[in-house]
Length: 352
Ligand SMILES: Cc1cc2nc3c(=O)[nH]c(=O)nc-3n(C[C@H](O)[C@H](O)[C@H](O)COP(=O)(O)O)c2cc1C
Image (cartoon, rainbow, N blue to C red; front, side, top):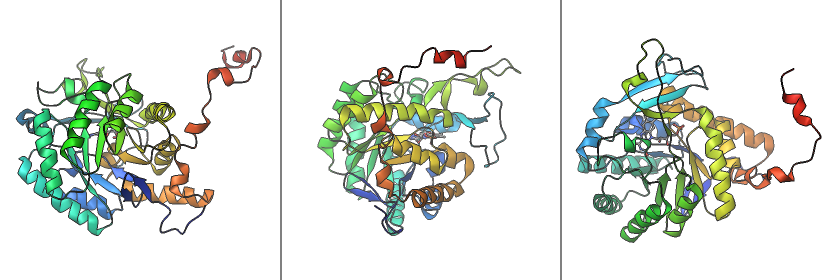
């Protein structure tokens, strides 16, 4: 099982091999080339550029963002790029501020730079209208960018200005959208889905059947946090919320989805990874690779290096290749009924 150290972090997603499973998920730190280069130089397997669409409202929204880092008692932490591992992030976001042609040029340069480092810079769309999404996808393919991710589940969909961001929750819509994209382009296509739906396995199946090379599971949640000092809403609005607590929730849906659609379809995890061990947890639950965003946004590019090191150490200790991890825990899950009977065992857990 143990291969030489040079190869043992490789993971395969459709026809693309990533040199390691750490994908930097899309965020503000990838609005500019500089951030993308830093992540690639820090060793990321891939970086997803900040998403774009044609809506001016989505661009303007980038001027109205705000971000709070919170401790486990909902208290505000200092934004010092050295957060505790259990910090949660509460924020509004917008989309890439540049016109599409400039963004496309940036994405092209970034992917060329990535290629020189045996990495990828992935183009990313958060559609506002389906016609433009198809038009942009074609242009992205034509520009020679190697992979496209389309996020149809951005959590801000319902709070953003009308028409700025599409948020899809139904398998039938996922099938239509993926099908339309697959017809328009041949390039590798990743579909990023919301976690705010009860149809997650069905949405994954729909994306798979319609020709997506993989899916990214799953977007953050919308939240509301009252500030007890001011008695006002923190940040003034509802906003997206994520933290390490989200990892088990994402894992739950990875395992359920794998059970329904089979072991051979690659899935990417997002929402909850803060460390290399978290990437391992996601992979044991069935992910082939993991998108990490908040940990890098709030902790800096050094997080990439340390996470990869942590994974290498784990694999060395366990004498495994990275791909040996995929789904190992998922495939051992049992039902409640399969558990051993233990008479009145619950008494041990009740207060005396
Ligand atoms: C500040 C911020 C901006 C984001 N912008 C985008 C975006 O433009 N496109 C996208 O697909 N996801 C975006 N996301 C979602 C992240 O890529 C990621 O899926 C999510 O934060 C959950 O992963 P995490 O727990 O590693 O942060 C953003 C997240 C944050 C925190």
